[in-house]
Structure formats: structure tokens, C-alpha cells
Length: 67
Image 1 (cartoon, rainbow, N blue to C red):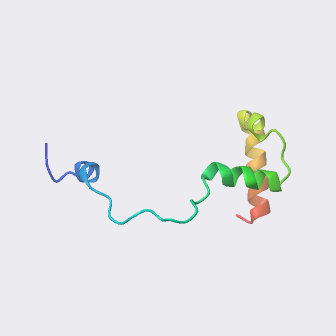
Image 2 (cartoon, rainbow, N blue to C red):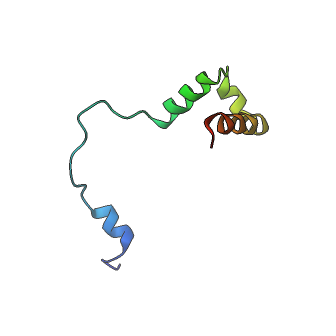
């Protein structure tokens, strides 16, 4: 195979630098849970199963955040 392929370069590359030593950043799910709690949604995981209901929740969240 071609040694210059981008995929091969990325796969074989080493990461430079080091990890931050302070508190880890919040995960995406933690941000979602925090936002839904601010919006006072209960049982949001069950509501996320219903695609239409979840879409309405996301529309409300975008309006609240100004997105």
C-alpha cells in the first residue's frame, strides 16, 4: 500500500504534547443532563425514545439558548 496515504499517516502517528493536569472537561452527556435539568425536564431518557417528542424538546432548548 501507499506509505503516503493520509489514513496510514494518522494511524501510525504519535500524539505530541501532554495531557492537561487540571480537572477534566465535562463530557457531552453531562452537559446535556445539566441543560435538561435547567429546563426542568423529567424522565428525559424515556422521552428521547419518541423521536417527535424529543424533536419538540430540542426545539424548545434551542429557543431557550438562543441558537
